[in-house]
Image (tube, rainbow over all chains, first blue to last red; front, side, top):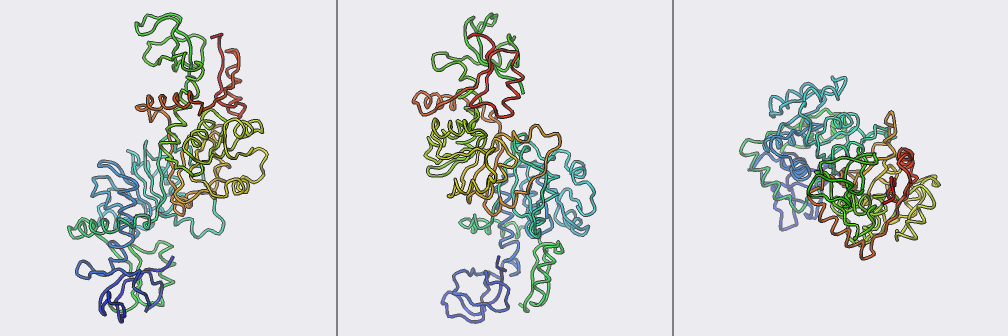
Length: 267
Length: 267
């Protein structure tokens, strides 16, 4: 994976781009990047702060949009559960669930994140898994009606505990498995496939790039909701290019609320 | 689960059923059953042997039909892999895959079953897992092009080995998990969910009853293919009602080829 950037064109020999314009692209971790322009997309700074081009109006926003609405097809009154709920994607998933008339429940790893979900984003319920002994019991308590849609960013033991709580015809989007990324040797877990028959579960893994033909649709809708005040966002911004690795590691450890960004210079 | 039967009406006070007619129903393990008639479906003995009402023209046939065609949506030229391939459902899945223009690969547990798949049913490849040390290597050898559709009847270690062989956008139908049914304590297995993201896998569990509104469509099509000689079937018939439990246990152990039946009397 290459780090994504939003920045200003400081010099251009490509007639499509003028100096001073703001662009988003896939240029990796560097202070200045060179591009043919092919992979750059212009960002309108009048719509929202340009940092949103990496968050709610960028890949994380589109990931939440297509992953929840397209893959999980939530219906009004259903319960949508999201893990990694305070992250760049998860925090949007819960808000989209509310827009669709669903009950939104979040799982996150600090009390500050839980307050953010409940008090700022309008989640109906949430719990701090790091302060929870038995995830399964907690889910039974917070989601007695059962889970219709599970948007998974983390995998591992949290996801194991969700399965007994799933309702008939539950839908699962596998967006991330952050609990598994750092393992040298994959750890075994309970076999969950028998649940798929009993509960007729449908599960699908995806990457936002699968929906590249529909980015414009997604961005239009997300921008509309953002302007109407139906979507909120927070960013975790670290200053200084030299702090990029630390910011990255901290994000993997769950240190961020909303999109983790590194501010390289003073735009 | 209640044992299904096909048999003759020996006495009827229901005007819809006449003595001598053949019916299929859900009457359980008994030699004679009483029914209001509500759950009985008439079977036409002129179409095929009445035993097929419990097999290729019954639930197993419909399970294969909807599970493969509807849930997995195989496309011509794709490779369809089925576990429990010589069973009542699996043996039909492979034949339906061939009808759809796919390559059919089967996994089963005796050499006799493998011959049946390859020589009688037209599977393109198959292997005896009980004589295979490394399922994963064997799949790589037999399915070098990768698996597009996996129809799972067994779960457990066989299914674990299928995941590395899956292609991008593979579809999985979870029809059975027979390897797990007899476990007192579910055994742990490797965590497979990260594969779902990398390979954009879609997986769905189902029961044939989910398609009850479309049984007529399925039976019509299966009957047509059977009459055209495009579908073959075999049955494993045990004689004598008293041997029902043994037949059931033997089926769970993989003793059957095709549908396991018990012949109660001389129809």
